[in-house]
Length: 153
Image (cartoon, rainbow, N blue to C red; front, side):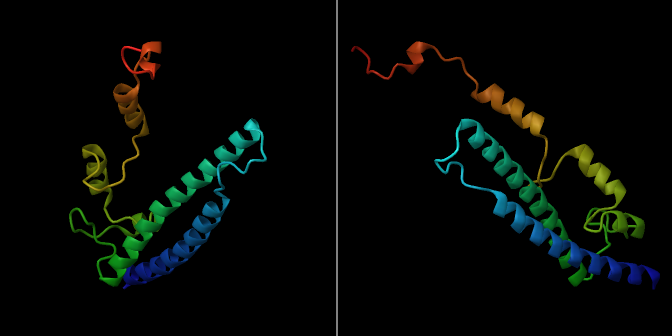
């Protein structure tokens, strides 16, 4: 029964975390401001844009965590919380206490990280994304490329 008691405490913790995240996301999105109000100079506008981007990124990160918490709460409702979605074994309570919204044991998590994300999983390999963008979209332009006049004029 100690495992069941621990799982019930974790459920309560997840519910509180969800409420906190919903509040934080609302605050972060409230800080995302329009890009130009016509009053600021270029430097002030750049600073405002940077702050808005930061708040948008924080809200996105918190939204991903909220999605994971919601998934854990569904697993609790279905009686499958604490069961690894990879191998089906019980996830140790210590792992659940460290990461209450996890749905995999350490071994399955390591396997996922080695093999890369499954279809539909969020990936955070931004350096590869940037390299792909540079390789596929950075091209040298000449003045001739920028000439908008029709041929022969």
